[in-house]
Image 1 (cartoon, rainbow, N blue to C red):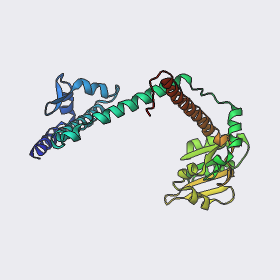
Image 2: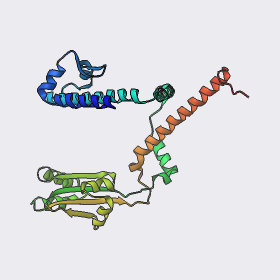
Image 3: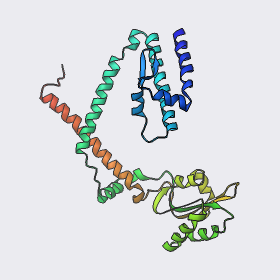
Image 4: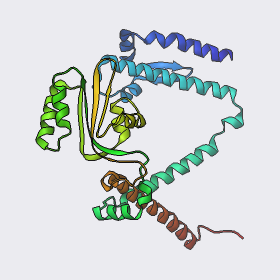
Length: 287
């Protein structure tokens, strides 16, 4: 225990002493070791490999200091563990072998899959999957098409933008966006894509349930204590419990199809490897 205290005390003195820019710069300019814990040494070259190029000197120094502290703590832990753990507790041979075996298996599976996986998914395949698995796409939250405006309530541009937000005319929306560019805190439109209502709720700084309670007709409004008003116009909405629209689910469906192909490849690989091992006499079940 005295040794633990001694090492910690050294770190407590040496590492904070490297906090100034001048000290760290001088420290890192040396070709020698930049830190020591017992017999372990950390060299400048190791730090150079970890610090991205192009950073300011202050950021480089900060990252260097963080890595030095992390490295030192790892070394201290290792030293303490070596002293305090029993011989059997320090024997990690089995765990290392299991990890190695698992890592090699994973890397070969990735190599095998990457060479064979077909990631192209047609519109027809997506539509077929959607039609035959609609129970998987029932909405847990509403999805909407909406426009969102955030600006000071007393702005003279507010009525102009709000008046055009509900229009279906492209020119009106372009004009609203143009006015909002110079006068609004935020103006976002989701005219052609469905979004989770929770995404829109975050613009209001609230949850989707609270946003639903604000909704009156196609509008929702909220004003904060500073006079900033958040307004949303809902051009379309599909409530929770209903099946999500195809365009909202398409990206998810593509991922699911590709993921299923990947799993099939891995399953086939595992089966083929076992079959080959049996045929070659490498795999034998002993009676």
